[in-house]
Amino acid sequence: MAQDPKIGYQIKATFLDVKGECSAGHKAGENFEISCHNPAGLCGWFYHDIFPSLQTFQFGGALPWWQGDTIQLQCPDPINVVTIQLERIKRT
Image 1 (cartoon, rainbow, N blue to C red):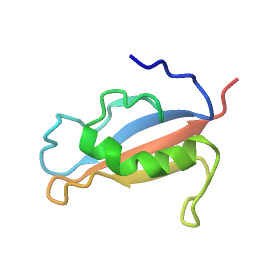
Image 2 (cartoon, helix red, strand yellow):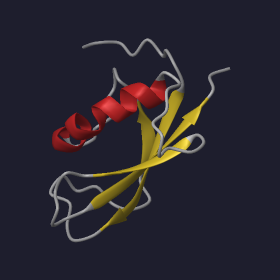
Image 3 (tube, one colour):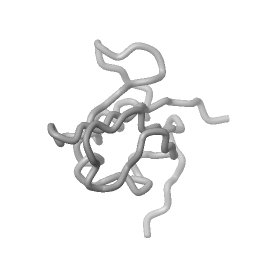
């Protein structure tokens, strides 16, 4: 199994909301550390969908509509919408 080299910012993920029923069982309030090397049990569909944003965010980048060190992203399932917040934390 690949090792997470702990590079870039530390990313804390928190599920903010689940509308409907997440097929992977994610629940609002769950939180965990995630990275480009570690999907941390996140549903494969969701991880695949957020990976480009995660990669940009983890390595200090930004998109014009992002502000600060938190972003919110949504699952690609349009019926059972799951919203996740990513927070980047400078490694010490």
